[in-house]
Length: 460
Image 1 (spheres, rainbow, N blue to C red):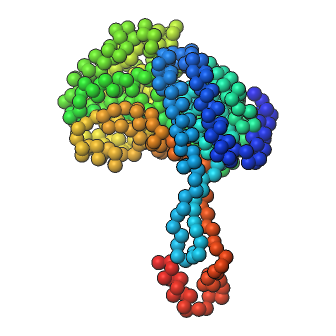
Image 2 (cartoon, helix red, strand yellow):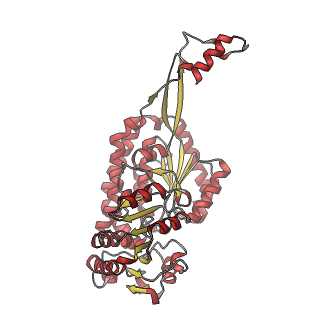
Image 3 (tube, rainbow, N blue to C red):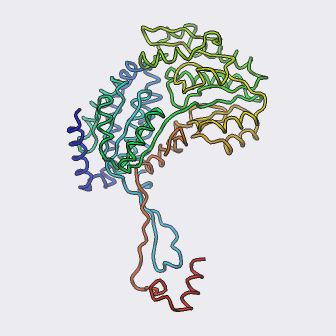
């Protein structure tokens, strides 16, 4: 799509938004229902596209993408009136007589740029939030997931007129053309490096941005943990979508006293969950493309690989892989892994580990397996990270009742449920002042001692 075509779409969306059509709650609800019905209608094609792009099984495609998208749409329909309702707040005595309230209003014309690893969910979920908040939207799905991108364009073009919701497909040229435009909000999900560029481009227009990025999300396994259950849950979260999940456990810090037991259980769980030949398992996914496939092979140290390591270049598959004896200096610890490679490091002093983690970049997620309440308190209150779980992994993002987002290097802003509605709307603060009384103390000339005393009384 050319720059001129993209500009024309945005101009049509600006005119449509300025008409006031999207402000009606009944209109928003109708569009959310239309989106829900379209996802249901294309459910089979959605899972087929996800299989083509990422090798996802039909079950995983629904569980982790289409199903969660439907949940978010339903949540928005159910809570739309409550989220949009103006909220009365206390008025200071100095402003008597008046009433004060806050009101959430849409930003206007928004851009949603989605990634390739969960290409359907991470397009439709923020779109549902944007629609609920009353915006128009241009969507830019990733070129690395071509089958899903094509399906999104088909589904959303059938569902909405382009002056309301439009899909722009393509690669870097289209991304650049979109970022050249002035939107009222940009919502981006992807890597930190691209996120920096998006934020730089937004700054040129003073456009607010929500950035959902990633990072090296650690998983701490203490000596008091239920090792068997920890291994089971870690294996599920790490190798889901072939490790291509932004909140997957990137690496493990395991207490030295339970390292051997944890390694043994992880190996056992990989076999239980993926079989003796994971590369032949039809429910085990693939790496998105050859570029990332080669990057991941470059992170695997064969001498430190204690399980897995097999791969099939023709099918872009890498078996669930575990590495032991890893140090901070290894290549696998130098970047976000984003693949089915799990390094294991050990610690002996929990407090020293926490001090070390405080000095690192803030991760999108952090996981702690322990029975020690003191450790839970230290990690949840004292360590900066986007979100996480105690004695589980990744499931904190699978709810519309809590916001999901990063902090620092892992992103800014959050969404899901109420947080999603808030991410795509601005909170106006309004004072409705009455006219039947007008206290004179704020007007010049400031000569009255009585009014000065009253002013100190009101404002203290």
